[in-house]
Image (cartoon, rainbow, N blue to C red; front, side, top):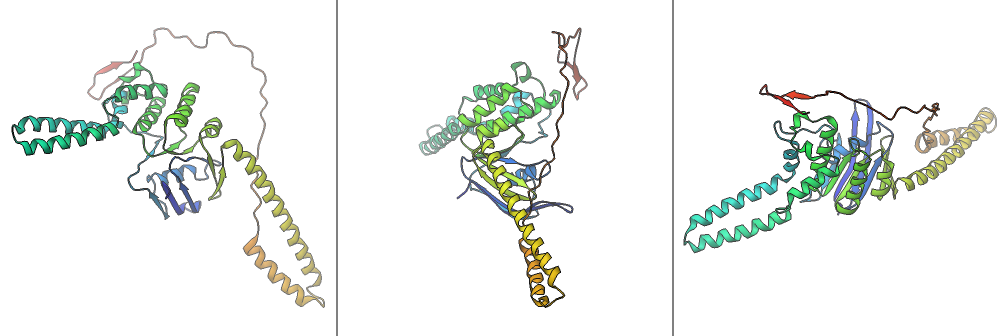
Length: 351
């Protein structure tokens, strides 16, 4: 049974067909890259898989007891919390377990000599300890710090309120929090958008060596796709085309497929032209009946079996003159300061 399966998914935006009855299944631990031209429906499919957008028709089923996590492009955080508080929110369930454990300890102290009640509470305590261990135990502080550092956030930024974060900081925080949640399926829409080179290399290392779940990602980062995914799914004109392997293998296989498809299309069009020439030549002569029969067969074949020629993307080249060397100093500031005003009217200075 697949981890997640989408069957006969259809999605339109007005009169524009985005997904036309597509189906896809993802196995546990599989790594899939969604590729295609902009506007073909990659992000739409990702949102439908994550339950963030309804399909017009079709069905999506996630294996019972499993969790999917989606990387939001516009993450929302609780006002007033710091960057690190927001990251720690990934462990809300663990905090709930710890709070219940404290209640059990208090109940044990109040149980006195009631042996039956003490036995019940001790069993509950043992159960909660096992649950806490599965959720990360008491070692989450190091885990949080390591994840935030991995995506490029520094200790100095940990205490910054979420209202004062830049778009890039929010994007990195959202990625770190999602990875800390450790869902069984990661749905990543352009996960490297806010990462520098070091952060991109760290994410690649994390996904290949540490994370054990399944991944479906949309990315323009060819290196990430080539080194992380083991399957490419191309979204093209409302349909899905599957390719085994990474991005480099996909490029080679697709080129061969498109060449074969173009040749088959050209061969069919040549056949159509030959049939049309025969029909035009004999439709009024002694072979008119035969020509009429061919005309009907040709119309039927064109209607039912016409092959599409692959869409060729236009390309262009830009030649830029060699830029003269600039100075060693890239930017210099003097007396620069930045701050913001809290909701309570107090001014907070960042630097």
